[in-house]
Each structure stands twice: as structure tokens, then as C-alpha cells.
Image (cartoon, rainbow, N blue to C red):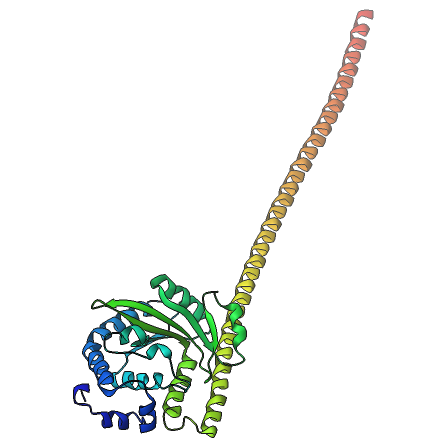
Length: 331
């Protein structure tokens, strides 16, 4: 139904706003309806802006998925009623005097974008990515559950840590965009997939039917703790996987080193064998040369002996011939 045809009674009934709450609100129906009409007319343009944010954020490699929405006119109107009731927790002074001309400068979540990631540590990487794309209008806020506030030691100095009464864990950013000569704010929430699941269930169950039911709230709190443990387990498994990879890399390097050492030792053995073989071959040559020398010496000795024998025989023969010649002369 268009806001143009929405009546005051229909609005209060559809949004579960009691007459007491409505009377306590510091805004009139005409002012509230004018805001709803203006926002309804601008919804299409706001959708374009939301899609642009989603496309840019999805380009971050550590973002698992992106969800976005433009606040529906009646949801905006219901929020303004809650924010303009004094003496309740949701009251905000800045909402006093809100109208169709300034509501988009007061309400910071007309466009909502959620960047979901797998591991808790991815949130800081996504923070750096967002800071490289836009300048925030308000310092980022990291909402934590009571007991989680020690995480502040790991966060950049420009991120404020606040304990959320319902236990939400999420990084919140507010960025400004110029749209149709008016500045429009976009709220970007960065949280894990586990936290997103819990948040969705919490909103479905807690609001509006069982917001004060003690048993429901108790179970939601237990569920919240389980979600926190699941995120811790995810980070732990990621760390284990990283350590396993490092061990495998170290083992691979060690195996490569051993393999290289084996190859080096085998090369040394081969060189040693070659050297021994060369020494063996050299010894054979030496032995052969020595044998040849000994043979030469033997041949020389044999030749000497032969020559000596021949000389002796020759001398004897000469002597014998001399004797015979002497005998002939004497005759």
C-alpha cells in the first residue's frame, strides 16, 4: 500500500504501536506521513546507490557475500516514532524536529549494506578496504557482546568499541553519498556469516512478539554464545590449516634438502670412484712400465752375457787359430 493511502490507525495497527506510545511520540501524523511519502518517492534512486555500494564491496576478496536493502517507508516511520519517545531506551534527541526536508540528514541507515565474511580476522582486512574507498561520516563502531571487549587491542585506533546490550557483534560504518543534491547516508555492517545468521534469527524471534519474554531471551543469549564459539572455532581451524601448510612446506623443504644431499653424496662417491679408478689405471701403467724396465734390464744382461760368451768364444777361436798358425811356422 502506498503511503498516500495509509491512514493513521492502519499505520499504528500494522506496526504494533500502542496509543500510549503514539501519544508519547514527539511527532504528528501529518509530519510523519510527509516523511514516508518523500522516502517512498526516493526509494528507486536509493536502490541504485545501494547496488553501487554492494558491487564495490563485493570486489574485496575477503568478503564472502553482500546483502543490501533500502529501508521501507513504514519501517522508517516506525523507527521515528520509537526515536521520538522520551524516557525510553531508544529515544534520540537528534530526532526531535525531524521532517521531510531533513530526515535523510538524521537517519543514517536509509540504505543498509551488510558485508559478510567467513573468519573473524577478515573483518580488519575489509576495514582497510572500505577505508580505501570511502570517507566515513562517523567513526566506525565495533559492537561486541559483554565479555568480548578485549578485542579492542587488535583494532585500529579509529574504531570505537561498544558493548551491545543484545549481544550483537558487528562493525558499523556510516558513509555519505550525494544524491539529487541531498546527502544520503549509507550504513555498512561487517560481520561473520555466523553472526548474520544469529542476527536474522534474533530479529525474527525477538521483535516484536517476544521482546520481553525471559525464556526466549535466555535461549537467544545461549545461542549468541554458541555463535561466538563457532566464530572462534572457525579462526582456530584456519590457524590449524595455516600451521599444517607451514609444516608441509617445511617437510617439503627438508625432503628437497635431503634429496639434494643424497645427490651430492652420490656425486662425491662417483668422483671418488673415478679417482680410485684413475689411480688403479695409473698403477697398472706403472707396473707395466716397471715390467718393461725389468725386461729391458734382463735383455741387456742376456745380451751382455751373450756378447761376453761370444767374445770368449771368439777369443778362444782366435787363440786356437794362433796356435795352429804357430805350429805351421815351426815346421
